[in-house]
Image (cartoon, rainbow, N blue to C red; front, side, top):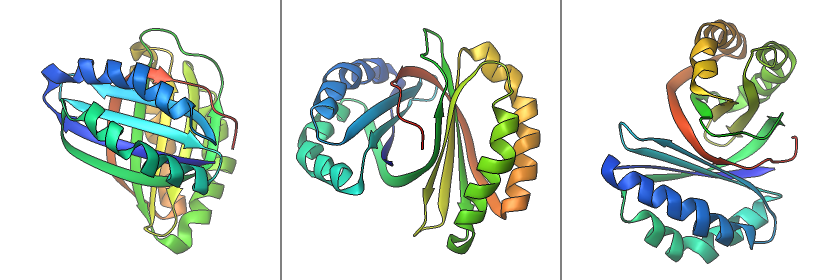
Length: 204
């Protein structure tokens, strides 16, 4: 599977209105596109950050939807977004355990890795890190996204609630430290969000 992410920042006071428009109209627009497989919508209300991820069956579907929805997407984001970055990813690993209820939370880890080491990172994550992470209480789903051409990767983890997210920080830090060292990856950023929407996607 393939993913497009949009990371926007702006005035926190305008965030909820735009998030609701994306949750309703944005999701409806995406759902009508060929190859669409799911959507995640995450917010940091305190700092004014919004992250949208859309999941696609293949690269062609992802690119076709980008062109078709570009104008309306910009209109939906414009009341909030003062900066926006759009990235394309390959979903190397995707695990979704259960549906999420109110109060769910999301952690995003961004990493840099040499393009020649991307497969090492994927194998390390799948074979070593993932079995340990899946034992952490409250974990509801996790994915590893990679950009092979630019040497980047992202791990997104869903938790049932903020308490579970907070309790996982120590155990996850230990796994992260060991895994990034083994895979020769560098942690670039670590962020946490509230979940507005997270629809299930097939395993990758």
